[in-house]
Length: 304
Ligand code: ADE
Image 1: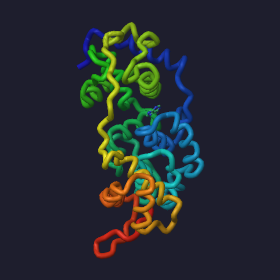
Image 2: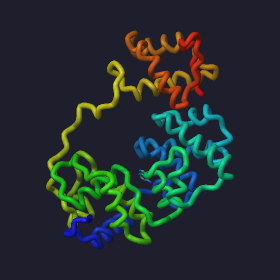
Image 3: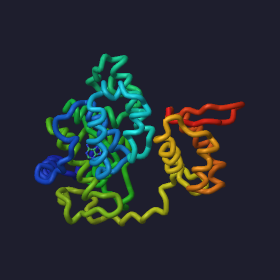
Image 4: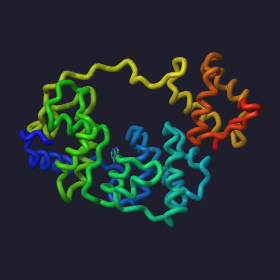
């Protein structure tokens, strides 16, 4: 349900005008291939725009087409991902590329069901491909869009409050301006990233201030101590995993488990070495590393 007090036509007009006047000129905007859309969206899911701005053109220069990506080795793809973090995403992208090339003759599905049936493609990515690559009338809801729609359409009391995700998807379908889905989705993302920010929204500069249900009414969101990342003895698991991949990346034949433990101990602590095995196991499960074991004990680790 859309709360009836909000003037949706005004909301459309103001957002679209603002986007036409101030929209960011990002390299993945405009006419790009489905593959290029996919790469940019996977990168943007967990990495900030300023970093993706540097990495995306380099990755595309390396692997300009889905066929070139599928023809590479997984190791090369993970290597090109360096500096982006969350290396699982490189593996996901690579597996998807090999699926498209080997099982679909290089052709992308062009409907939501087909896209969501692809390995590693969820609701967000399928909608982003539909809206941005195929220019279809579908909403795209990431955390920025969810925040903007929650605040504009409902009266939020605290800056950290959000409406439930399924409700926002449903609402996003209802408020989509037909024929302008591309600009609308990009505009909501920009607004969430630059003005309607998580902690301290800049309502005084907001183009939809006049129609927003929450303008100037929210209490600011306190700074969290930590977002509750799973930690391993003080080091967040993500950093620990990332460091193991970094150590393996330049070493083609990998490292013995003992060498890897020593390198980890010199950077972190001896206690952290005790936590190396579950980390290596989880990287192996995700297909990022290959582990050779002797009598069930890891003896050599390399990038997969
Ligand atoms: N975040 C996710 N997708 C994005 C896009 N296309 N533009 C800007 N930020 C984004």
